[in-house]
Length: 342
Ligand SMILES: C[S@@+](CC[C@H](N)C(=O)[O-])C[C@H]1O[C@@H](n2cnc3c(N)ncnc32)[C@H](O)[C@@H]1O
Image (cartoon, rainbow, N blue to C red; front, side, top):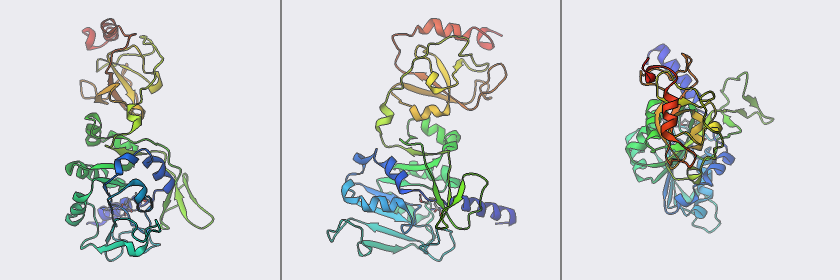
Protein backbone atom coordinates (compact mmCIF):
# COMPACT_ATOMS: atom_id res chain seq x y z
CA UNK A 1 0.00 0.00 0.00
CA UNK A 2 1.38 3.42 -0.88
CA UNK A 3 2.45 5.90 1.84
CA UNK A 4 -0.69 7.88 2.73
CA UNK A 5 -3.04 4.97 2.16
CA UNK A 6 -1.15 2.60 4.44
CA UNK A 7 -0.91 5.30 7.11
CA UNK A 8 -4.65 5.86 6.83
CA UNK A 9 -5.30 2.07 7.08
CA UNK A 10 -3.01 1.83 10.12
CA UNK A 11 -4.84 4.71 11.80
CA UNK A 12 -8.19 3.12 11.09
CA UNK A 13 -6.97 -0.21 12.49
CA UNK A 14 -5.82 1.58 15.65
CA UNK A 15 -9.25 3.17 16.03
CA UNK A 16 -10.74 -0.34 15.84
CA UNK A 17 -8.95 -1.41 19.01
CA UNK A 18 -11.18 -0.96 22.04
CA UNK A 19 -12.56 -3.60 24.32
CA UNK A 20 -16.05 -4.24 25.57
CA UNK A 21 -16.76 -4.37 29.29
CA UNK A 22 -18.30 -7.52 30.76
CA UNK A 23 -21.12 -5.54 32.39
CA UNK A 24 -22.20 -4.10 29.00
CA UNK A 25 -22.22 -7.61 27.51
CA UNK A 26 -24.24 -8.99 30.43
CA UNK A 27 -26.73 -6.10 30.28
CA UNK A 28 -27.51 -6.81 26.65
CA UNK A 29 -27.27 -10.59 26.50
CA UNK A 30 -29.67 -11.13 29.39
CA UNK A 31 -32.40 -10.25 26.86
CA UNK A 32 -31.50 -13.17 24.57
CA UNK A 33 -31.12 -16.12 26.93
CA UNK A 34 -33.73 -18.32 25.25
CA UNK A 35 -31.93 -18.00 21.90
CA UNK A 36 -28.72 -19.68 23.00
CA UNK A 37 -29.92 -23.11 24.12
CA UNK A 38 -28.27 -25.86 22.06
CA UNK A 39 -26.48 -23.34 19.84
CA UNK A 40 -22.93 -22.84 18.61
CA UNK A 41 -21.75 -19.30 19.31
CA UNK A 42 -18.90 -17.68 17.40
CA UNK A 43 -16.95 -14.63 18.57
CA UNK A 44 -14.84 -13.91 15.50
CA UNK A 45 -13.05 -10.67 16.37
CA UNK A 46 -11.95 -11.71 19.82
CA UNK A 47 -8.64 -12.47 21.40
CA UNK A 48 -9.93 -15.04 23.89
CA UNK A 49 -7.28 -14.06 26.41
CA UNK A 50 -8.66 -10.53 26.48
CA UNK A 51 -12.22 -10.71 25.19
CA UNK A 52 -15.08 -10.39 27.64
CA UNK A 53 -17.33 -12.01 25.03
CA UNK A 54 -15.28 -15.19 25.36
CA UNK A 55 -15.36 -14.77 29.14
CA UNK A 56 -19.14 -14.32 29.19
CA UNK A 57 -19.92 -17.36 27.04
CA UNK A 58 -17.34 -19.70 28.57
CA UNK A 59 -18.37 -18.91 32.15
CA UNK A 60 -22.10 -19.04 31.31
CA UNK A 61 -21.80 -22.03 28.97
CA UNK A 62 -23.87 -24.46 31.09
CA UNK A 63 -26.36 -21.86 32.25
CA UNK A 64 -27.10 -20.84 28.66
CA UNK A 65 -27.13 -24.48 27.54
CA UNK A 66 -24.66 -23.82 24.70
CA UNK A 67 -23.51 -26.56 22.37
CA UNK A 68 -20.16 -25.02 21.43
CA UNK A 69 -18.21 -21.78 21.72
CA UNK A 70 -15.72 -20.84 19.00
CA UNK A 71 -13.51 -17.78 19.24
CA UNK A 72 -11.05 -16.50 16.67
CA UNK A 73 -8.30 -14.05 17.33
CA UNK A 74 -6.86 -11.60 14.85
CA UNK A 75 -3.11 -12.29 15.01
CA UNK A 76 -2.40 -11.27 18.57
CA UNK A 77 -0.67 -13.79 20.79
CA UNK A 78 0.54 -11.66 23.63
CA UNK A 79 -1.74 -11.70 26.60
CA UNK A 80 -1.09 -8.13 27.61
CA UNK A 81 -0.44 -6.73 24.19
CA UNK A 82 -3.99 -6.34 22.80
CA UNK A 83 -4.62 -7.40 19.22
CA UNK A 84 -2.37 -5.03 17.36
CA UNK A 85 -2.03 -7.17 14.26
CA UNK A 86 1.71 -7.41 14.86
CA UNK A 87 2.34 -10.94 16.16
CA UNK A 88 3.16 -14.13 14.30
CA UNK A 89 0.04 -16.27 14.15
CA UNK A 90 -3.63 -16.09 14.88
CA UNK A 91 -5.46 -18.76 16.87
CA UNK A 92 -8.95 -20.10 17.27
CA UNK A 93 -10.39 -21.69 20.35
CA UNK A 94 -13.13 -24.19 20.83
CA UNK A 95 -14.93 -24.84 24.11
CA UNK A 96 -17.61 -27.46 24.53
CA UNK A 97 -18.26 -27.05 28.23
CA UNK A 98 -17.03 -28.02 31.64
CA UNK A 99 -15.72 -31.59 31.92
CA UNK A 100 -14.26 -31.78 35.42
CA UNK A 101 -17.34 -30.49 37.22
CA UNK A 102 -15.89 -27.27 38.62
CA UNK A 103 -18.17 -25.13 36.39
CA UNK A 104 -15.17 -23.09 35.22
CA UNK A 105 -13.53 -23.17 31.76
CA UNK A 106 -10.07 -24.56 32.58
CA UNK A 107 -7.20 -24.23 30.06
CA UNK A 108 -7.13 -28.02 29.47
CA UNK A 109 -10.81 -27.92 28.51
CA UNK A 110 -10.26 -25.28 25.83
CA UNK A 111 -8.97 -26.52 22.49
CA UNK A 112 -6.36 -24.14 21.04
CA UNK A 113 -5.82 -24.31 17.28
CA UNK A 114 -3.55 -22.29 15.00
CA UNK A 115 -4.93 -20.52 11.96
CA UNK A 116 -2.94 -20.53 8.73
CA UNK A 117 -3.64 -16.87 8.08
CA UNK A 118 -4.08 -13.79 10.24
CA UNK A 119 -7.58 -14.57 11.52
CA UNK A 120 -9.32 -12.05 9.28
CA UNK A 121 -13.05 -12.75 9.58
CA UNK A 122 -13.23 -12.77 5.76
CA UNK A 123 -10.56 -15.45 5.28
CA UNK A 124 -11.57 -18.85 3.99
CA UNK A 125 -10.69 -20.65 7.23
CA UNK A 126 -12.63 -18.14 9.34
CA UNK A 127 -15.61 -18.40 6.99
CA UNK A 128 -15.50 -22.18 7.54
CA UNK A 129 -15.83 -21.53 11.28
CA UNK A 130 -18.61 -19.04 10.60
CA UNK A 131 -20.51 -21.74 8.72
CA UNK A 132 -20.46 -23.90 11.87
CA UNK A 133 -21.96 -21.13 13.99
CA UNK A 134 -25.62 -20.49 14.75
CA UNK A 135 -25.15 -17.12 16.42
CA UNK A 136 -22.29 -14.63 16.09
CA UNK A 137 -21.73 -12.29 19.01
CA UNK A 138 -18.96 -9.71 19.13
CA UNK A 139 -17.81 -6.13 18.81
CA UNK A 140 -16.30 -6.17 15.28
CA UNK A 141 -13.91 -3.61 13.74
CA UNK A 142 -16.06 -0.56 13.05
CA UNK A 143 -14.04 0.36 9.97
CA UNK A 144 -15.17 -2.92 8.34
CA UNK A 145 -18.74 -2.83 9.63
CA UNK A 146 -20.50 -2.88 6.24
CA UNK A 147 -18.47 -5.88 5.07
CA UNK A 148 -18.87 -7.59 8.41
CA UNK A 149 -22.68 -7.34 8.31
CA UNK A 150 -22.81 -8.27 4.61
CA UNK A 151 -20.94 -11.48 5.41
CA UNK A 152 -23.30 -12.38 8.26
CA UNK A 153 -26.25 -11.83 5.95
CA UNK A 154 -24.66 -13.81 3.13
CA UNK A 155 -24.26 -16.85 5.39
CA UNK A 156 -27.68 -16.33 6.92
CA UNK A 157 -26.38 -16.07 10.48
CA UNK A 158 -28.11 -14.84 13.59
CA UNK A 159 -26.09 -12.19 15.40
CA UNK A 160 -25.77 -9.71 18.24
CA UNK A 161 -22.99 -7.24 17.48
CA UNK A 162 -21.87 -3.79 18.54
CA UNK A 163 -21.58 -0.95 16.07
CA UNK A 164 -21.50 2.77 15.73
CA UNK A 165 -24.95 4.36 15.65
CA UNK A 166 -23.88 6.18 12.48
CA UNK A 167 -23.98 2.80 10.75
CA UNK A 168 -27.78 3.20 10.74
CA UNK A 169 -27.30 5.86 8.09
CA UNK A 170 -25.22 3.61 5.80
CA UNK A 171 -27.28 2.76 2.74
CA UNK A 172 -26.66 -0.99 3.01
CA UNK A 173 -27.38 -1.15 6.74
CA UNK A 174 -30.52 0.97 6.47
CA UNK A 175 -31.93 -1.27 3.77
CA UNK A 176 -31.59 -4.26 6.13
CA UNK A 177 -33.33 -2.24 8.85
CA UNK A 178 -36.14 -1.23 6.51
CA UNK A 179 -36.62 -4.85 5.45
CA UNK A 180 -36.79 -5.94 9.12
CA UNK A 181 -33.71 -8.11 8.68
CA UNK A 182 -31.72 -6.21 11.29
CA UNK A 183 -32.73 -4.01 14.25
CA UNK A 184 -31.32 -2.34 17.32
CA UNK A 185 -30.66 -4.33 20.47
CA UNK A 186 -32.00 -3.65 23.94
CA UNK A 187 -29.48 -1.37 25.60
CA UNK A 188 -27.95 1.88 24.46
CA UNK A 189 -25.61 2.99 27.21
CA UNK A 190 -21.96 2.05 27.44
CA UNK A 191 -19.90 3.46 30.24
CA UNK A 192 -16.39 2.85 28.97
CA UNK A 193 -14.09 0.76 26.78
CA UNK A 194 -10.50 -0.26 27.51
CA UNK A 195 -8.03 0.89 24.87
CA UNK A 196 -4.44 -0.19 24.15
CA UNK A 197 -1.45 1.55 25.61
CA UNK A 198 -0.48 3.14 22.29
CA UNK A 199 -3.78 5.00 22.26
CA UNK A 200 -3.29 8.75 21.82
CA UNK A 201 -4.81 10.83 24.62
CA UNK A 202 -7.84 12.80 23.49
CA UNK A 203 -9.15 16.02 24.85
CA UNK A 204 -12.46 14.48 25.85
CA UNK A 205 -13.82 11.05 26.69
CA UNK A 206 -10.41 9.62 27.44
CA UNK A 207 -8.73 8.87 30.76
CA UNK A 208 -6.10 6.72 32.47
CA UNK A 209 -6.99 4.92 35.69
CA UNK A 210 -4.82 4.45 38.79
CA UNK A 211 -3.37 1.20 37.35
CA UNK A 212 -2.29 2.96 34.15
CA UNK A 213 -5.03 1.36 32.03
CA UNK A 214 -6.28 3.70 29.31
CA UNK A 215 -10.03 4.09 28.72
CA UNK A 216 -12.32 5.91 26.37
CA UNK A 217 -16.05 6.41 26.40
CA UNK A 218 -18.20 6.60 23.30
CA UNK A 219 -21.72 7.97 23.31
CA UNK A 220 -22.75 6.67 19.93
CA UNK A 221 -22.50 2.90 20.21
CA UNK A 222 -25.39 0.48 19.93
CA UNK A 223 -26.19 -3.20 19.50
CA UNK A 224 -27.42 -4.55 16.18
CA UNK A 225 -29.19 -7.88 16.03
CA UNK A 226 -31.57 -10.07 14.07
CA UNK A 227 -32.69 -12.09 17.10
CA UNK A 228 -36.11 -11.40 18.47
CA UNK A 229 -36.21 -9.39 21.70
CA UNK A 230 -39.10 -8.31 23.89
CA UNK A 231 -38.42 -4.61 23.28
CA UNK A 232 -39.30 -5.03 19.62
CA UNK A 233 -42.86 -5.87 20.59
CA UNK A 234 -43.39 -2.99 23.02
CA UNK A 235 -45.90 -0.44 21.82
CA UNK A 236 -44.74 3.16 21.80
CA UNK A 237 -47.25 5.13 23.87
CA UNK A 238 -48.26 8.31 22.06
CA UNK A 239 -50.11 11.26 23.53
CA UNK A 240 -49.91 14.20 21.10
CA UNK A 241 -52.58 15.11 18.58
CA UNK A 242 -51.82 16.17 15.04
CA UNK A 243 -52.10 19.85 14.10
CA UNK A 244 -50.78 21.67 11.06
CA UNK A 245 -48.68 24.25 12.94
CA UNK A 246 -46.62 21.85 15.00
CA UNK A 247 -46.13 19.26 12.29
CA UNK A 248 -45.17 21.05 9.08
CA UNK A 249 -45.26 19.33 5.75
CA UNK A 250 -42.07 18.62 3.78
CA UNK A 251 -41.37 20.53 0.59
CA UNK A 252 -40.33 17.43 -1.30
CA UNK A 253 -42.33 14.51 0.13
CA UNK A 254 -45.93 13.96 1.11
CA UNK A 255 -45.28 13.62 4.84
CA UNK A 256 -45.18 15.68 8.02
CA UNK A 257 -42.09 16.41 10.10
CA UNK A 258 -41.92 15.25 13.74
CA UNK A 259 -39.03 16.62 15.82
CA UNK A 260 -39.13 14.19 18.75
CA UNK A 261 -40.03 10.52 18.83
CA UNK A 262 -42.22 11.13 21.89
CA UNK A 263 -44.19 13.68 19.85
CA UNK A 264 -45.30 11.33 17.09
CA UNK A 265 -49.00 12.22 16.84
CA UNK A 266 -51.28 9.42 17.91
CA UNK A 267 -53.94 10.35 15.39
CA UNK A 268 -52.01 10.86 12.14
CA UNK A 269 -52.27 8.11 9.56
CA UNK A 270 -50.03 9.44 6.80
CA UNK A 271 -46.24 9.29 6.47
CA UNK A 272 -44.17 11.04 9.15
CA UNK A 273 -40.49 11.97 9.21
CA UNK A 274 -38.98 11.13 12.61
CA UNK A 275 -35.46 11.36 14.08
CA UNK A 276 -33.29 8.22 13.82
CA UNK A 277 -33.64 7.70 17.59
CA UNK A 278 -37.02 6.25 16.60
CA UNK A 279 -35.25 2.98 15.80
CA UNK A 280 -34.68 2.40 19.49
CA UNK A 281 -38.47 2.31 19.91
CA UNK A 282 -39.36 0.66 16.63
CA UNK A 283 -42.01 -2.03 16.87
CA UNK A 284 -42.74 -3.40 13.39
CA UNK A 285 -46.26 -4.36 14.45
CA UNK A 286 -46.98 -0.70 15.22
CA UNK A 287 -45.09 1.11 12.43
CA UNK A 288 -43.60 0.44 9.03
CA UNK A 289 -40.49 2.15 7.67
CA UNK A 290 -41.17 3.80 4.35
CA UNK A 291 -37.94 5.53 3.37
CA UNK A 292 -34.81 7.20 4.68
CA UNK A 293 -33.83 10.81 4.52
CA UNK A 294 -34.63 11.70 0.91
CA UNK A 295 -37.67 13.28 -0.69
CA UNK A 296 -39.17 12.50 -4.09
CA UNK A 297 -36.47 14.62 -5.72
CA UNK A 298 -33.78 12.46 -4.08
CA UNK A 299 -32.61 15.46 -2.05
CA UNK A 300 -32.67 15.61 1.76
CA UNK A 301 -36.14 16.18 3.16
CA UNK A 302 -36.73 19.88 3.68
CA UNK A 303 -39.26 22.26 5.21
CA UNK A 304 -39.30 25.72 3.64
CA UNK A 305 -35.87 24.95 2.23
CA UNK A 306 -34.36 23.90 5.58
CA UNK A 307 -33.29 20.28 6.18
CA UNK A 308 -33.82 18.76 9.62
CA UNK A 309 -31.11 16.27 10.69
CA UNK A 310 -31.60 12.80 9.09
CA UNK A 311 -35.23 11.74 9.20
CA UNK A 312 -36.73 8.30 8.80
CA UNK A 313 -40.11 8.23 7.06
CA UNK A 314 -42.53 5.96 8.87
CA UNK A 315 -46.24 5.16 8.88
CA UNK A 316 -48.49 3.67 11.52
CA UNK A 317 -49.60 0.16 10.76
CA UNK A 318 -52.77 -0.10 12.75
CA UNK A 319 -55.26 2.71 12.36
CA UNK A 320 -56.26 4.16 15.71
CA UNK A 321 -59.67 5.06 17.00
CA UNK A 322 -58.61 8.74 16.90
CA UNK A 323 -57.56 8.96 13.30
CA UNK A 324 -59.46 10.61 10.51
CA UNK A 325 -57.11 9.62 7.75
CA UNK A 326 -58.64 11.14 4.66
CA UNK A 327 -59.20 14.55 6.18
CA UNK A 328 -55.67 14.65 7.62
CA UNK A 329 -53.92 13.59 4.47
CA UNK A 330 -55.76 16.28 2.59
CA UNK A 331 -54.84 18.89 5.23
CA UNK A 332 -51.22 17.87 5.33
CA UNK A 333 -50.91 18.01 1.59
CA UNK A 334 -52.57 21.41 1.23
CA UNK A 335 -50.11 24.04 2.47
CA UNK A 336 -47.36 24.19 -0.17
CA UNK A 337 -45.20 22.68 -2.88
CA UNK A 338 -46.01 20.34 -5.67
CA UNK A 339 -48.55 18.45 -3.59
CA UNK A 340 -50.94 21.36 -3.96
CA UNK A 341 -49.98 21.96 -7.53
CA UNK A 342 -47.21 24.58 -7.15
C1 LIG B 1 -13.71 -2.94 18.51
S1 LIG B 1 -12.50 -4.20 18.79
C2 LIG B 1 -13.37 -5.27 19.85
C3 LIG B 1 -12.60 -6.41 20.37
C4 LIG B 1 -13.43 -7.44 21.13
N1 LIG B 1 -14.41 -8.02 20.23
C5 LIG B 1 -14.13 -6.80 22.29
O1 LIG B 1 -15.30 -6.49 22.18
O2 LIG B 1 -13.51 -6.57 23.33
C6 LIG B 1 -12.49 -5.00 17.22
C7 LIG B 1 -11.47 -6.10 17.11
O3 LIG B 1 -11.49 -6.66 15.79
C8 LIG B 1 -10.16 -7.01 15.42
N2 LIG B 1 -10.09 -6.98 13.95
C9 LIG B 1 -9.71 -5.96 13.16
N3 LIG B 1 -9.76 -6.34 11.87
C10 LIG B 1 -10.18 -7.61 11.86
C11 LIG B 1 -10.45 -8.55 10.84
N4 LIG B 1 -10.26 -8.21 9.56
N5 LIG B 1 -10.87 -9.78 11.17
C12 LIG B 1 -11.07 -10.11 12.46
N6 LIG B 1 -10.86 -9.26 13.49
C13 LIG B 1 -10.42 -8.02 13.19
C14 LIG B 1 -9.31 -5.95 16.05
O4 LIG B 1 -8.00 -6.43 16.24
C15 LIG B 1 -10.06 -5.64 17.34
O5 LIG B 1 -9.50 -6.35 18.41
